Length: 155
Image (cartoon, rainbow, N blue to C red; front, top):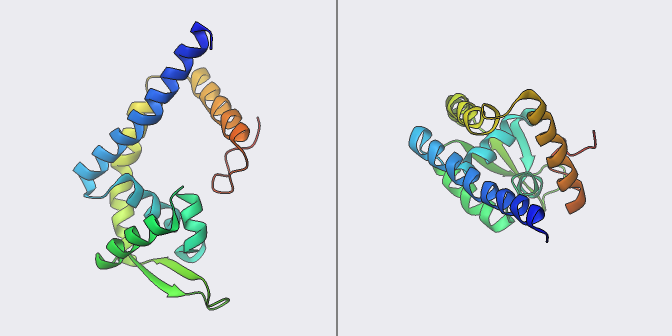
């Protein structure tokens, strides 16, 4: 790498490490949940009938099925989700967001959104935000198809 590439790379790596940690701290402090748990609840809240197959949910949150299963067990104990066999194919398990889970993610969302806005969008101009979107999409597309994120199409 030349000097400019190395500086860009190190900035990206630093952001990729520090941003999730900062979001995790905010959610732990304000809502008592991890960023990963929030993502699980949020994806379910955005899904039809607040339901997803565990395998699809694992893809969406970019976690292993094992990690998701451990997290789902904790979320079930809190009453925020329930797991049930998929009636269309009993080999699969569905994760379903409960009303209590909806309340939890709805209560956590404003603080999370405010923190994302403070850390990511407020420091950037509108033009930089557009560039960030374009750069993120290009890098995501170079990595490969991402069925989880609908925002990885080219501009």
